[in-house]
Length: 251
Image (cartoon, rainbow, N blue to C red; front, side, top):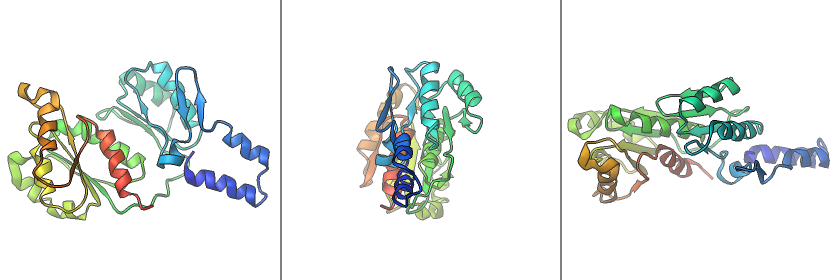
């Protein structure tokens, strides 16, 4: 339940437009709903501003389906990440309005009513190469689901430094930047040296053997010479979007 929705319920009760029983009926599942295999956190939106997000790996299709059904019943929409083909197909059948992103492996159901979120500006997602797009797509879907305007600057890796320099206007106009890069992930340091805004770097598992599944990129970013670069886990587009949202929201 989103904060604005909870506030509306309480204001209706205060004006005498809703009875105590009606209010109680809408709050009876607070703060969580026990499904036996999962405790669905319906108050996540009250605390964070967006509902609980469903991480699909390790869950059966039936479990994901049930969790998503309980979340969607609140009217606040839902976001499922790292969903395989079977899960995406099933969610598409069960929720006609859901938006499936096969590249990102996400399923996003917009809320019944548009989000009213005050933010500083757009979140710009920058990718080093086309191979980084799956992680960047996850970040983009997640950031939009959390109420951010999202812009993109793709395939501007340091192997062709003129490409990112040509996008300096886009970089300077962003409120928060997410840089998604594999190999040695040098792009985040380059961008971090060009802009004063918060920058979140996502190392990806893209690269040959010595990249060690993204570990080389992660270590490179943790040792970035550009001050103020924040680093999330390998391939964690969702985590970068969540961090960007906390920075971008005006509270």
